[in-house]
Length: 219
Length: 262
Ligand SMILES: Nc1ncnc2c1ncn2[C@@H]1O[C@H](COP(=O)(O)OP(=O)(O)OP(=O)(O)O)[C@@H](O)[C@H]1O
Ligand SMILES: [Mg+2]
Image (cartoon, rainbow over all chains, first blue to last red; front, side, top):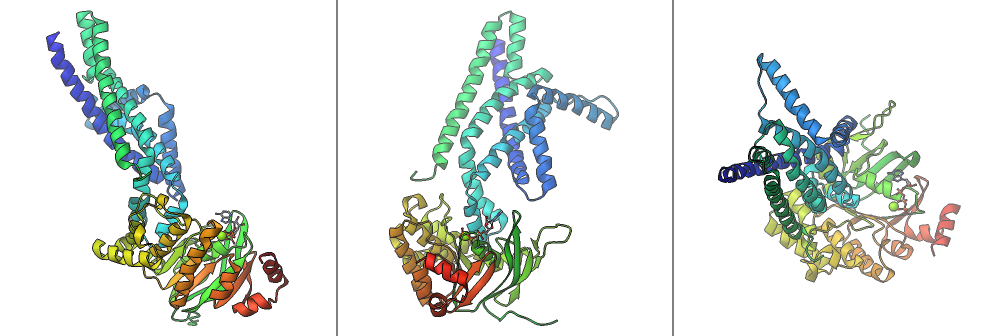
């Protein structure tokens, strides 16, 4: 059992790293996608609409498997010999793609809820579009999006457990291995639950602090 | 032809057309605003006043027509036969021109996450590159001018409608524009707050500023304008100095409009 404590710690590190990396990349992707979805170029907007619709309509597990096996096929073809995709990398890519699709819709909704007149006012002063984004849209958008983002981050933490299916040694996989080898499934899965619960609770606390930090003063 | 219809100053718009959502909102409007002039634009709801005003600083790009601002022709491409949208060709020019035309909106359009002072100073800082310290002095100066020295640190939600609109006027003034455009600046205000905004505008008019004011405030338009125009269905139907405009209107529609707004 003692050996498993060390393994759980390593699994925890992997889970946290995976969530942080794919969450950050996913939010950046979501921001870009939201901007593209709102752009005047119809082809860009339609293409991104297609992306978010498809990704949100397919189970995450399938996306992970497609990216893992598809990636393996593609890279093997490229090098002319069998190369297996790194599970962590496959996890980052698939969770980023998924997180980007969901946050894109959140950001898009948040941007649309900013009264158009505020943007008009910025334009009337001669601001460049990116100045308008930084001054008017971004700060308000983030504030509006925070509650939905909190939910999305919590889902992300839990979804990282799916990556264990392609062999990533995260919390979930450590639990599965331990459950099998020591014949104590309840103990190991309860331990894993406690770890995930701790992570999601931490995420909630952080988002509560952020919401307080970004609240419009004096509201 | 080398004809330059624009004077060196002011605004000149020729044959402005705009179609929106299947309506011909502007149907070939000609408009001139000379320096120092205070032009009031009146007309019933839906006649195209806001759209015309927004065309002047290209917040709305006209489908057809030419616009000169301070002697400079705005580079826009007209709508094409194939249905290509009208569009701005020189964004840099348009930003420069917008910065020289302050605009005040019916619904104030302040940024709620910025204080009154920040609302006023962001434009000078971001567009004109003025340093924050200098911009803060400038901002305080213009807040004082609209009677809001004590509200610099207040957020919009803590201000009354009249105060918010005065901050919006200060925001426009802080850019030190050559023309001020007002789109029904008092229409969203409770009646008891209209006066404070009109007083600020009258003071600005007294400084010899160039102003274009879309308004339903007849008494104010009559007193303050140097010229008044009446819009009807996307055209300027009548245009004259205020005495004639209000006392002896020619068109029967303007007579009817004035009678119903007494
Ligand atoms: N984006 C748009 N899409 C479709 N129709 C529009 C759009 N903007 C304006 N219109 C229509 O164009 C017409 C003129 O609008 P505009 O706002 O210029 O009128 P207005 O004279 O300012 O009226 P009001 O006194 O109500 O402000 C109206 O019939 C309006 O419904
Ligand atoms: Mg209007």
